Image (cartoon, rainbow, N blue to C red; front, side):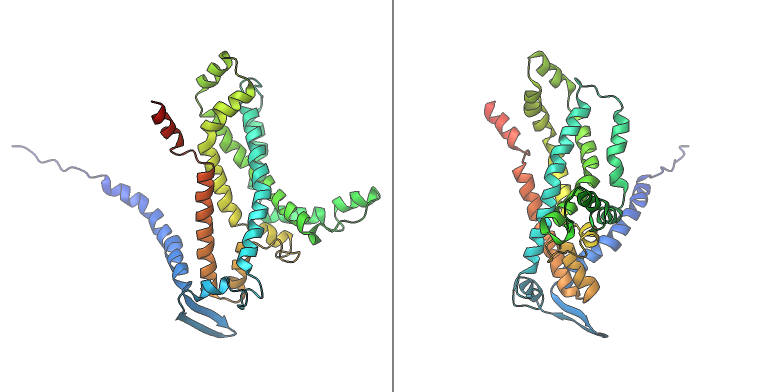
Length: 316
């Protein structure tokens, strides 16, 4: 007589283990995302103790953002101004960060230099990434204000007090410098991982053929590292467009003359100030669109996907 053995199905346990992630994602990310998009088409704000709306207004919130005469802009298209501020400060920090991190990554992974103590250097350069941005902003404010150590050194050498936070160039430079210091270590480690993932036999073959260090870097390292560089550039762009805490604290909410005010600071004014959920939703959707468009632009500009495969097919 054959006994029937009950088979144990383990498939359900996989679904049980991944269920918490999807539950948290749906509750805290997907539903708020849909709500934000929905509210962008409604008039919904607080006026004193009264709540106005939600009343469907279509694309009015979006139109007001691009109407200089609307109550949102006060004579200028604020969202374009603040998007420009955000991009300028991101570029000022991101380009030096990428170049400097690439240089460090190449030096630390060079087989010719064979730098010792790489673990120590990785730890040291990554440490600023562990410090809160608000703490960095307070530190720089203490260093560069009119009675700070930097101005004390300048005046002791016979110079005049420099008001760093009253000048657009210096204020933006300090914001970019903080972002550079905070993130160059993380970028360096990512690029180092990418370089170490390249087949070492390619470098050995290039050395045997008599290639110079610059030829190896330009012909081998850069092309094979491009996927990581694209990833770093896009994630840096996304983080840059979400810049908030550093300029908020360091420049007293975007001073001088709102030249350091970013898109997320502009969004925060409507969420925490007027409780205007309709305009806030419209700004959030536009930030999402801007991020997507610029990410695609960066990907295509630094584009590596498909180009080499097409060239190789043509050459076959």
